[in-house]
Length: 122
Image (cartoon, rainbow, N blue to C red):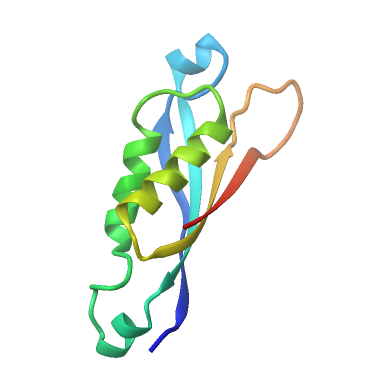
């Protein structure tokens, strides 16, 4: 039985030190991540078992490890690293869309956040 399910982890919050400017590396800031992935989990759902789908607690840990790990300059690089890590860890994922929000972007203006999204396919 084949069925595509979309699993979403919304607004995962992490403190990290990404950014182009030196002060971002020193001070750090909060980043918010949305992770959406499509999984062919019809068999897992029909049999009510975890095997064959994505354990979203582990997915959260994968995201956390990337965001709080090595510093990157670009939010684009961070988004792509998360997408690739999830695809590598979970062969069940067919497509992933990662969105990273940076509310304290060093911009001389008023805004809620800067946001970058990337979509990757198996």
